[in-house]
Image (cartoon, rainbow, N blue to C red; front, side, top):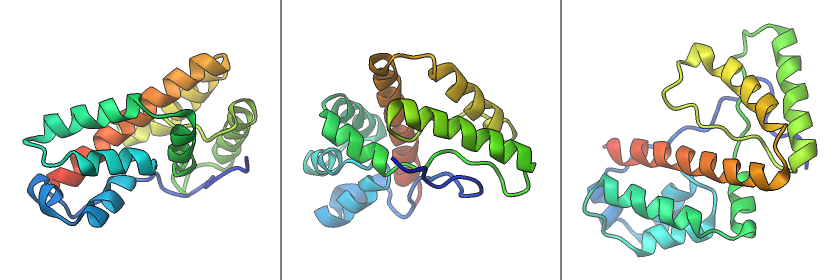
Length: 169
C-alpha cells in the first residue's frame, strides 16, 4: 500500500452538523454519509443507520461498538483505507517529519495498512510523541495481535467522532 497523507496533513476529525435528534430523523443517505466520516466501513454505517432511532448517545455508542466487533476483515480494510495517518504540525522540525515518515513506512510495510491511534485525552503537544511511541511499540506485534489493537483503535476513533457528531448542533 502506498503511504497516505504524510507530513502536514491534519488528522481526520469528527464531522459536524448533526445532533442526536437530527441523526434519528434525517434521511438514511445523509446519516450514512455522516457516519462514514466517523468510520469508513459502509456496512458499519448502514447498520447504524438501519437501527435508528437511538434514545441517547450511550445507546448509539454501544451500537457502534457492537457493529465494529462484527466487521469482516474486508469491512475493516475498507475502514482502514478511509483513515489518515496521524501527522505533525507544519512547523515541526524537518527531522521530526522524517522520523515519523520512516516509522509510518515501516509500520505499513509490516502490516499493509495505515497506522491508526486514538489520541482522545492526549494534549495536542504530546501527539507526535504518542504517535511515534505507538508505532514503535506496535511494530513488535505479530499480525494477529496488531489486528486486534487496530480494531480497538478504530472503534475508539469512531466513538470520539460520533460523540462530536451528535454533540454539535
